[in-house]
Length: 495
Ligand code: F6P
Image (cartoon, rainbow, N blue to C red):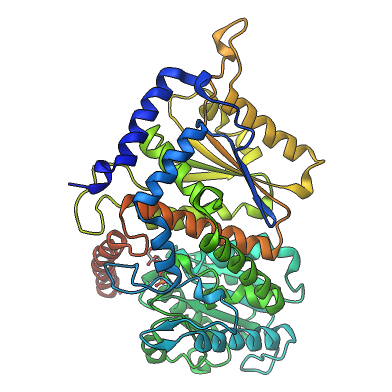
């Protein structure tokens, strides 16, 4: 039996939701104060179907679930990844150099700083064209080979901040077992001037090793790996066994989908320059500090989490739609999709008991304004309930794109009354958070990533599930490997 549904605060919320259903829209009091701004980021939650009492009851739930204590556990390196009995210290990656954080009696900050220094050296060497291929020509094309958290983060980071990228270099990503993915990526590249970053925390991911093998043959087997390959991994042994000499470590206490601030983001660090990468780390740390020190009712990650719990568990809305109103955040959607759904897509709690309540939402979305010309009809008049997180940047406040965003929020939350025929009627009532960023710049991108890392963690606390393992995926990988083994054996027998 799950304790959560026996909590006093949980049952108070159930009763409150029932009252709200009876009251309907008229039960929504004046919501102008549902707005919080911290440095560079504003959360406007005035278009949620809540009252001040809702927030009070949600904060009670957070307290009864020991959210404040478990926030400190995360930041202090307690073993919050319970099934693997390890911490989840993605926040340590962006702690200032002068910090101290002990893990098993050892201060881990020096080794984190050493990796950052190595990233800086590599970035400076490549950006100054001083990293040469085996024939002595400078490297000008960098290819990241990775998948999941070893791809989504770097790809999103580089796309969002592309105007900061060095223009004398080119950047590419390969992330699939599609037989043509490699050839398509390297079609116009020169093996003498191309560097591959093989990013894999485990160094056992089939798709990544499949493409590494192709890259090794394309560069030329005899060339050795020192000129054209860098490995980023927590499995140094496997990388060395494959012949890698340039190896940047990540740690088992950094989850793959939580590795945005680690060496997994090396290609972005090279492209943008270490100074920009440092601004990203500073922004993420700024959000960590807000998360650690701010009272629950003013704490943006906590509020986002609680509003999600309200919509999922009490208004029974199982999906979360992300609409971004700046093309710079287009790849934030798939990034958060993995971060959220791989963390909270679980139906059993940390004790292995099946849960009798909903957990992680189905996260989807796209560039918001383009949805108007794609699936907006379902959103405004369909039969499925959807909650939304919409993102805009204040630098566009005088541009049509922000007016279009505001208009969508108005229509989807307040509706369009039925006038001459039901055809034009839009019921409204869609709960929407509007996250306004001052601009899409490195510091704020770091804040945004940390904001969603922490929101997802707080929801896992409420649902009493482990946000940092992925047992389903891991077991599926076993099945996949056996299938691939069969395929490979068939391929061998066919030749
Ligand atoms: O999808 C499972 C998963 O392990 C993700 O958690 C991870 O980001 C991805 O595969 C890639 O794993 P690795 O970095 O070990 O290659």
